[in-house]
Length: 112
Image (cartoon, rainbow, N blue to C red; front, side, top):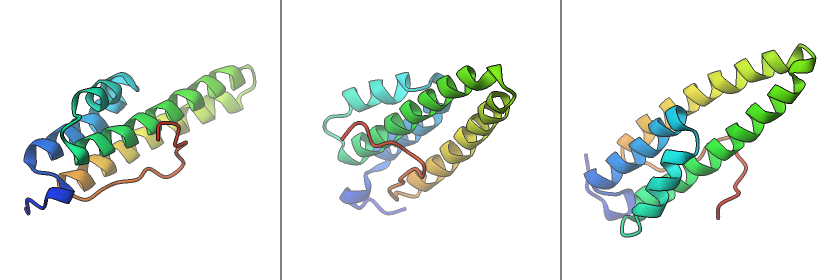
């Protein structure tokens, strides 16, 4: 493991991992809290912002799928969103644990 400042030290990596993993468990709440708290840690802040944007996107997708549950496609969409949320959060956590930045695919970049 390198301690390259642009890739964050171990504390920053830990906070970044928490932002991604807790994002799956708490929705956008944990990434938002981490984003607001880690002002002096640029790697963790950037990754918390990425997790926050992704969880906002997931929340929007869940709401749309719940509306579409009037027709069967909503159930399938809901299941797909949850599975993709788990998969992408795990990939993100593993990637930032290596000190690499991660960008979620299929993500609205609401927070700049």
